[in-house]
Length: 459
Image (cartoon, rainbow, N blue to C red; front, side, top):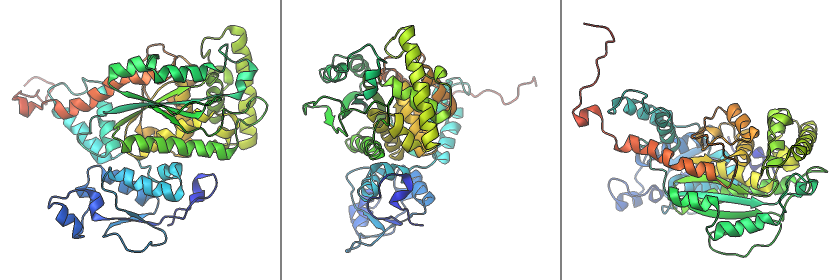
């Protein structure tokens, strides 16, 4: 079955892909060395390449055949040839698909359920470690999840970690939903880049890097280190009076987010974290959540930066009206709803999450902005939430609503609502601890410790 570029929404791009040919050199050094790889001898990626099982399952699930063979001289129609050995195989395949069908569609094609065999091995290993079964609580479940994401046991350590802060402005700011002036978005980007914001402090503590992505800041920002200027447009339109953006712009932001995820993983990141910045961005987040899960606006709309009761009432009424408009116009079309009431950073974060999970890298999501983006991603790429770790529970009610719908349990709950990626950054050491337990803790046999009796009764 050929995969048509039209199948995930948006404008057609490139040609369908119905087969992937992996040149043996792209699989890295086999047991026999590079000469063996260059010889074209048959190799089994599922056996020879760590983490390849999930990639192959994703392609097979889309009806795309995979074989290893020396790269053909000509360009075979419908066949993607992978020769890059300088990056992990999932990244090389993603890059090839993205060039054909776009980055977000590539993420869609490469999505697969977690590797149940790797998860099973992790769970069985936990039972042999020098502790009572289940005594490390959530760390044990997260460790098994990490193994399933990477399709490896033990799972790789989730470091280096990179926090990507997507920034954009919002036309709905004109409705008075935030007491902060819109120019604060650009000013806070400057604060991130000089290392003075809360996310910078918490990232340093966690040993993570911070990258800022300008996806829609209203003002022009200079190209400086750690800032990726990828502006789709200078802010959204006022969603209170019409669509926030054209569908094409929402699609571009989805692609951009997936491209950023691939770039960071290609550069060595092994854990990605979602962050955001945008004055008034909790309003589109609440609208997205209300529209996509059909909840009353009062149950998913919060105070954001700390608005008073009167402003909260007006914000809630606005969210209710635009969410109802989005549902009536678009039904369950998540891409159209995203364009109708979403923000550019929300769209880019949805692409970022989908890209990270497709590349078999854990992604730790932050608060309500990230939650709304994850909800969008889960509608466009069903099951994507399996590869996501909820960093924390924001006090914004929409965040808890999304976590509940998607069946995610947050790592921490500290009554936070700042955004920027701060709650997720605080969860990073716990995620790393879950991987280290599997990789470094001794079993009963290794430690020479007698295990408990299998019988609960007396002899």
